[in-house]
Amino acid sequence: MTDRPLSLDGKTALVTGGSGGIGRAIVDTLLRHGATTGSMDLPGCPPAPGAIDISLDLADPDATLHAVDAFAEEQERLDFVVHCAGITADSVVWKMPVEEWRRVLSVNLDSAFFLLQAAVPHLRKTGGGSVVLISSINGERGKFGQSNYAASKAGLNALARSTAKELGRFGVRVNAVAPGLVRTAMTESLPGEVLRTALDETALGRMAEPEDVAGSVLFLCSDLARHVTGQVLRVDGGQLTA
Ligand code: NAP
Image (cartoon, rainbow, N blue to C red; front, side, top):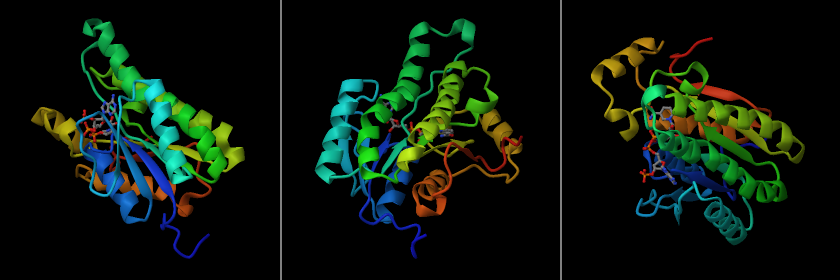
């Protein structure tokens, strides 16, 4: 263990959805701890100050491959990949248009597969890196009206556990972070009753801030987590307890 295990000096990171609520907090945190950080977002979404702007649609595998290769080659290494981009399109399963099923699975889950395929050769070359997939407690417990979203997040958990086994021999760790309710644009439009129920479910009686999720990502990227892989870390104030 190094003297400053939270230092990411000299390391590089790619964060998808880095201009969103949670993504921006993750980018800020990685930058503050010394990592050169690229923020992968849809065109027209300005990244956090200090981040390298990478515009693309993550549902496009060729664009993802090109963007990851270009970043890793320019920086001459790739240490961390954080997949935070995600969308919802809620409705009960019998009313869900097939395009909404496909769109959510594509942006949330297919994109993680494309990202890993593109990033693994660089992570293997650099060695000792960390991948963090932002999942959700709804991927474990399911959620009324979110069959597409919950299925995509359950898929991310399985992807993290499987690729942790595949990449361990190269010193690369893969974990998922499963937040409960977090204060962002994604949640601010929820009806008051839904927010109250979610708050009542927590042990801590508070809604997470994006920085709470960013802190767990920093931990999983850092040397403090050097023996942690294949895990789904809930950051939910005790909202889901097994
Ligand atoms: P957010 O503010 O809406 O951020 C999502 C980000 O993903 C946005 O920057 C969005 O860009 C980007 N994005 C969407 N589709 C994309 C695509 N095809 N290509 C590239 N980027 C794309 O949401 P958030 O609340 O911060 O959520 C971040 C992650 O945390 C998501 O994976 C979400 O499922 C997860 N999560 C959130 C909560 C919560 O309570 N907020 C709870 C559990 C898990 P645009 O702004 O252009 O759409």
